[in-house]
Structure formats: structure tokens, C-alpha cells
Image (tube, rainbow, N blue to C red; front, side, top):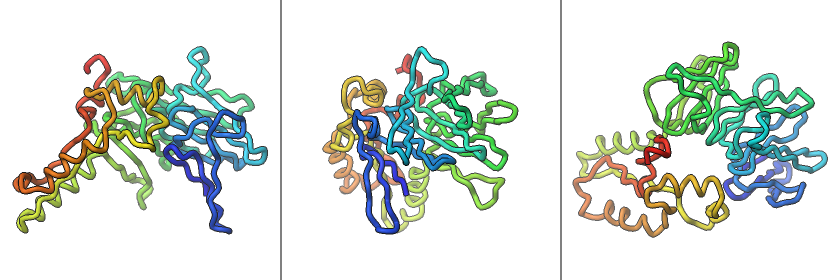
Length: 292
């Protein structure tokens, strides 16, 4: 079993011996070039396509134990469109669909001898280009169409035969995950507001017992785990600093006041509320940079 981690590279679990092995990140050809991994796909040759959130796609030849890196090149239209990859899936032909955080959807025909990424830049019914969406999740349905979950822009559907992009519904929620339902004609969608809805439902149900249900919505924390990406020039660090009105990461101590308030008598009449401690980032995500 191959396991991708946040800031811990790739781990392999050998079920026969119940032990873990680790592929380290570094600068050599036998190392992962970035230690934040969003997903892993095994191809027909049992080699790995590893998506990272800053190092593009790392292809790992298991027999040779060697990496090949596919990175964004502004001078090459056939390169992957971003080094920040959020989601990857394999279709029935073994080809790859790659969702990026900041430059839309890519397609890779793995049957060709030359690796060339095709950038899918269709427009939806509102004439919005797919490259303008920040992709969080991908799902392939029984008809080989691609469902796309986005950051604060809702759900999209890409018809692979007609090459048409459509926005589904009016919601602009963030779609964190899309999975198959027991009925192949249905899918299950995980939105960012699921926890908020649970909080509100529980608050309504338990208020008669004088129990208040509230939650804390934290931003991105400055911890030892995020230290490798909190450096000047890192794309995710730049994203956080540019999108957060406070222009900094959340300090764990910043949660203390919110926690004490919600645990105290001062919040006795506060119920069904999510208190966001994020420096204002939630107020800016979904807007263009010029609107901030």
C-alpha cells in the first residue's frame, strides 16, 4: 500500500511484514522532489504517478527505483500547467486526468512514447474558462465523464466525448471530495460546509437541553509540519500571505481566545455558530486578486 502524506513524502506499507518504508524527498534522482503529496496513481506497469503541491508530477519507476519529474514550463505548452497538483485519476484506458490548484485541468495519454500534457481549457455555459478554476477533486463516472470539485466555485462536469464543460447547480461551495454511490447513476459530494450543517443541526436538536453546539473554523497554521512550505518564493506560502488580509499564517495561540470564549458563560446564548479564526482568508477566497 502506497501512502502520500503532507510534508512526510511517500510511505509504503508492506502488509506481509506489517512494516513501513519511506521514500524520502531531496535533490537526487532517487528521491521525491517535494514532500507534500496530494495523490498517487499506479499505472499499467505498476509504476507510480505521484502528484505534489509544489513539485509537479513525480514519476517513479519501481524496478529502477528512479524518479522522473514533470514540471510546469512557461515556454512549453505541452508541459503540465502547474506544479501545484491537487487531484489525479486514471481512466479505463490508463490515461491520466490531472487537476491543478491554479491552472485548470490536464490530460495525459500514457500510451504515447512522448510525454505531452494536454491542457483542457473549455468554457462553461457562463463563458468561464476551466483554467480559471482552482481544482480540489476529480471523479470519473460510468460514462467516462469527469466531475470536477473546485475551491469556492462549486461543481463542474466535463463531457469527455463532446468536450463540453458545464457548471452543475448554483452553489459556489468548495467541493472537497467526490465518490461513487452504490447506485452508479449517483455520486456523493463532500462540501466544505458539511461540518457547519452538522453543527447547526445539532444546535437545533440539543438547545432544549441547554446545550450549545458551536465550532471553530481555523485558518492555515504556522507549525513544524507547515514549516517546509512557509518560505519566501513557495507558491502556497505566497497564496496564503496574499489571500489572508492579515498577511500571515495563524499562530496556534490565536485559537486560545476563541476556545475560551466558546467554553465560557459568555457564550451561553451563542448556538449553531462557526467562529472563524483565519485572519480573514475565508472572506477573500473565491474572489480575484484584484478584488482583495
